[in-house]
Image (cartoon, rainbow, N blue to C red; front, top):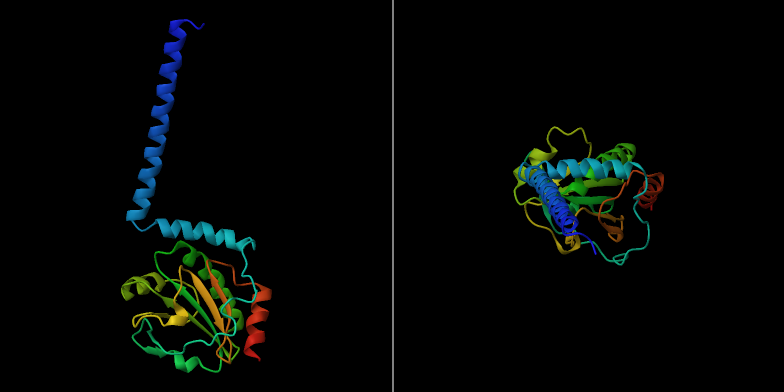
Length: 208
């Protein structure tokens, strides 16, 4: 049987460990709260996730989605950040890459630099269009996020809402519509779309 003083020392040490544990958690929660309320959390998380995407470990799965052969709904309008209206009907007959994003979404931020590089590599293809749609409740939030970025791709805001074809459970959501108006790719979640395989897939759809 252990002496009583040994038991007291063990109990005191255990209390000290708990105090250290609580203090550590308190510091971590304070840091997270600070980043959240200052708007820096999605920026930092997006940067980390973008580096992860650069490793090539997270790629789009070019499998036949459940929505394949479903006709895309071309009804709908969007507002560009310089005040111009975009009509989805204007994309009919072309291959259309659509990405839904928001300023507060870390994974959305993570994949944007890679989508920008993809767009720059295929933007000369006349039958291939890109449309990056911000879904922030306030267009100003989407505009402020995009302004000043070096990314290159067409952007707009869902100021008039989203039709049924663009409804999703989470963001980012990416889909590809072929010239016949069929959804041939659909994915919820981030990916590095700047791959040879996905580029060939897009160009192949555009030349159908």
